[in-house]
Image 1 (cartoon, rainbow, N blue to C red):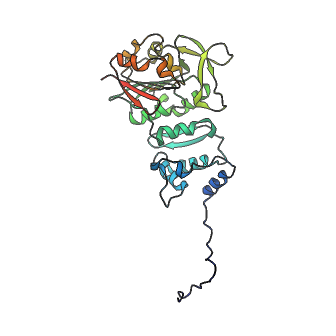
Image 2: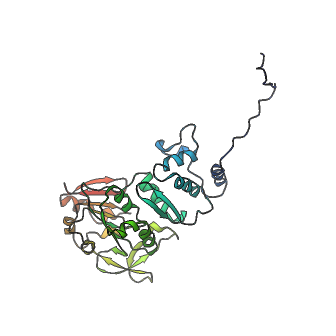
Length: 306
């Protein structure tokens, strides 16, 4: 066989291949896998609709997906953030399409995970038709309210959150709604009785989304606990179009003082924790009032009047 002109052929060993060049972010990914920060999830563990294409790196896949949610610069910042960039433990600000700036805390606290679940995984809270008023119980850093406000421009929201650190981020992220008079934030918590209760910090430091409340006596920070009727009264709304509840297990006491408050809300979206759904007899009570229940993922339920 005659070799092509200008291309010498060596017999007895395969031609050498030049090593592929890696981008700086891809190099960080490789370094993470060998003991640094947590490496991105292997492609074979990702759901089929989230695996990169045959000729697409994890980095390009990440940037393409997130650029549909945030601006390109923010997508790049998130990529470096996830792969263990220098500022991984610092606050990070991204620009969300249809909203603007959203502030997140250090990577270990769960704010990025909540951003991912809400906007990347599409776990945004549902809303009934012609929704205008919302009570957000367990507002965290405001992502659920932001999701609703992007879809409902004239939305009015009463947000309740017991954790002081979350309140600070919440007020920053919802500052636009607060300035316009569309949103009021209160540091309080849902509770079976109107009394002062204790904020129980998460077992793991920095796990911002896992703050719970309990009876006073442990020496922790105190907040006002309120029954469902009291919370609806505090909202100032004559009728609540949506009551969203994600309160880390306290939902088990939502009917402790009765269930007549259901007549004051058009719809209810609840994230359940542990056995709370069974403990509060949610399905029997809500269906008994005539509301239709729809499942939300593995641990949630949406109920509305037909």
